Image (cartoon, rainbow, N blue to C red; front, side, top):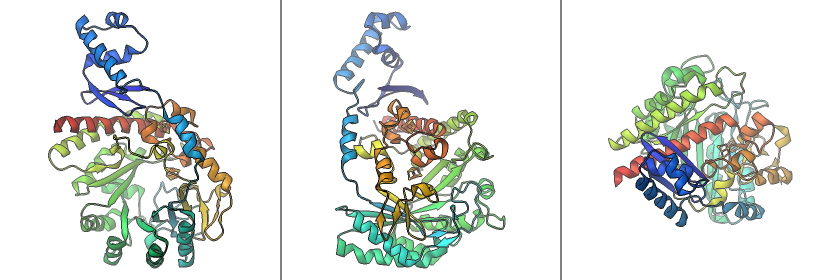
Length: 451
Ligand code: SF4
Ligand code: SF4
């Protein structure tokens, strides 16, 4: 499968199955489009170039094909079947340390931290049992990931500390290493928490939506005040104290700020070097939900952002925008590329009372309750269902040029919009494909500059 597009003055040809990317001139670009269904003479007739130019381009395309860099076959489909039959181990947990929150974000999928249940804080006993469960279920895997999530985990920070301490005590005994992550809205962030996080947390995720007015509309405090003023000075300090590494500011854009490139730039101007900005996922009846008619503007914003990133990189003021960071080298883990985030198999969420769900987005959906951290997984049938999900089991993904970058999308979004876990949410797909195109264009531009 070949995908070709023009962006920012570059003609880009992607060979999907080999992962090869080609930046080509107009003639080669047009020949590629006709190559598979036409003989050379027919191509010459259809294109407005000189005969020798087309012949030369044809030759080039032919050579790329012979080298296995264009029009290659998909060799992964059989491989994924084999991989899916292997036993998987649990390697990451998302601990819902607090089903409670001190903000009242309008788009909160966790319903202001409460998920579909009562407010609750995880006890240290449950947190420790979760780590025991992870150690038991992780086979020979050495590195284990634990995300302290909420609601807002700093509302139960004493337990976070206790669980981390307990985790460290298990490492030597079981030959494991815990990589802890903290996701926070910043309201309760203070020097003590920052110091602890800088010592113990591999990564911290700082939630903020960008410009003050944008952030404060969607992320007000419980009494309707600005959260930006409270959190921003702390986030700036926190990012600096981590040397602009191993953290990221994460925002969400909605229909109210379709000009979200300005929010990303705002965060970059404040000095943040690790930035993520995701489209909100909301049901159509929500006023902030993204609609199909918004896509052209969103695509323009991604283009604008991509150009700005190239420019800032050239000026030595670059920053990382997570959704444009893709690995073009192929990477070793094909299985991961084909089946995504690992929800329901390698990655599970734990509620404050110790119940296990496929991921944080499924918490509260009783039909996805897998078991609990004390007794382990009881519903292995649900895990099997998640394990079987991959880009080849989803019709939409099989034909999608972005499949090896996207890995088949989000099971939770599929469930939200289609009532099944193995479909794809089309609006997300459209945006994902655009981001992949921008990401590759950026790499092409930066590579050209290095030459
Ligand atoms: S963009 Fe959509 S269709 Fe394409 S691989 Fe991802 S989930 Fe599948
Ligand atoms: S299923 Fe979706 S929300 Fe859940 S972990 Fe995967 S990508 Fe994230």
